[in-house]
Amino acid sequence: MELTSLEIQRYKRNINVKEIGILGQKKLKESKVLIVGCGGLGSPAALYLAASGVGHLGLVDDDIVEISNLQRQILHSTAKIGTPKVESARETLLR
Image (cartoon, rainbow, N blue to C red; front, side, top):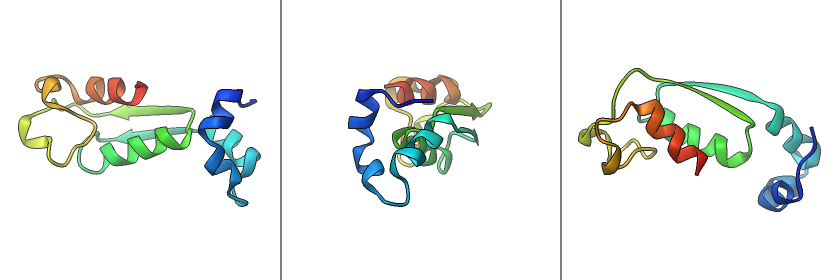
């Protein structure tokens, strides 16, 4: 799987790391990760995995966003209160 010119620009800092390089970035793009729980730990993990270029993130969580979640569950926002966490997370990660 090749990287587009936009992906090369986006992940330039990763690619410049000797231990990652272009081959490592391609492997990230081809990888799949399942995140179980989109709460306090899953939220930042999902954000960093998406930002690093992981190609496919699966999300599992049967809870909804509540106001008491917002100070620690950074994928979610006030506008998403009452929304299933997986929907809220998906929308945030796709942006």
